[in-house]
Length: 225
Ligand SMILES: C[C@@]1(CC(=O)O)c2cc3[nH]c(cc4nc(cc5[nH]c(cc(n2)[C@H]1CCC(=O)O)[C@@](C)(CC(=O)O)[C@@H]5CCC(=O)O)C(CC(=O)O)=C4CCC(=O)O)c(CCC(=O)O)c3CC(=O)O
Ligand SMILES: NC(=O)C1=CN([C@@H]2O[C@H](COP(=O)(O)OP(=O)(O)OC[C@H]3O[C@@H](n4cnc5c(N)ncnc54)[C@H](O)[C@@H]3O)[C@@H](O)[C@H]2O)C=CC1
Image (tube, rainbow, N blue to C red; front, side, top):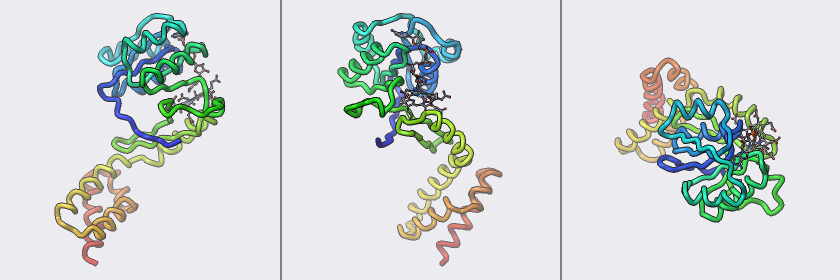
């Protein structure tokens, strides 16, 4: 499987099942999408989330059976359907209906190993993600061990601390070097040095302007050679 990034801004995500898993997925997607959760009951965290963020989270109390699922997807017209009920037949119906309407689908109750014919290209896995905006790491165990995905995510969180600031700084420097008509080979060498410089990483922890100063001296050294 190949990880790809989707922008769900302005899109709708329809979640079937308001338990622990439905609640976790809803909260993830509510960061950028409108989320509709259809379920006979809702986890406390989901009720809190809907109160805090009325604009993006809507809870609909209903218990659709496998037959009724298609109608919900037609009415809500989501970009992604999350099948997170504890009823395998309902989850299977949600997957089939989503694929039928052209939406993406995340089936939460089966792993890759359980599928004999592989997955449809629109049947997606939600990875564990580590974020230091604008940097994002997506981590999957191919469905083999979600608990390991979570444990590795916690390790990588410490590892990429400060990467967001480094992305902003090196992005700015990259644009500036282009404007100054620095030849491509020198420009690449300079940027490669900056993102690998322990000095710049350390200086960034003190503040953006310290990082900038340290990066400038790394760049001048490359340009003056
Ligand atoms: C295939 C996948 C489908 C999908 O949901 O996309 C899937 C499926 C299943 N998960 C199960 C169990 C658990 N899942 C978690 C946690 C997470 N699960 C997530 C993703 C995925 N889970 C996809 C594969 C990702 C990959 O490739 O690694 C994460 C990464 C992202 C997220 O969900 O947001 C999130 C961590 C987020 C974070 O913290 O960063 C924990 C840990 C915990 O809760 O503490 C447990 C209990 C421990 C265990 O069982 O490992 C079960 C068995 C249910 C049962 O026993 O009945 C199934 C079904 C099956 O395997 O058949
Ligand atoms: N992907 C993942 O990370 C994980 C997946 N799972 C799997 O996900 C499923 C859900 O797990 P949990 O959230 O822990 O269970 P849960 O029991 O907490 O939640 C299930 C929810 O589905 C609702 N529901 C039942 N029938 C419904 C219907 N017809 N339509 C809409 N909603 C309906 C229930 O009211 C409940 O709110 C399980 O099948 C489990 O195997 C479990 C743990 C982690």
